Length: 75
Figure 1 (cartoon, rainbow, N blue to C red):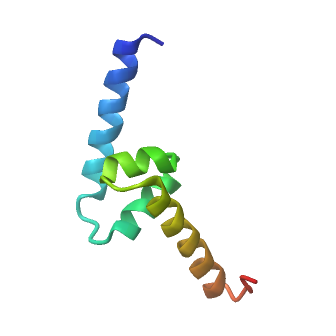
Figure 2 (cartoon, helix red, strand yellow):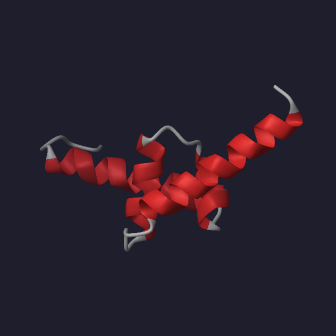
């Protein structure tokens, strides 16, 4: 794929992500939503202006909380 097309697709992804998460109040909601949409943690971090580590920790915490809600042990 040419660099020009790749750059335009990147811009479209960022714009769409911003529009879809604009009404979400917490960064956790945004991170989980974008992850479920198939975005990599590094791209989520770039879009939200945070670090990949923050995204990974948030996703890990969200998975553990979801497991507890379903009655499964996280140990």
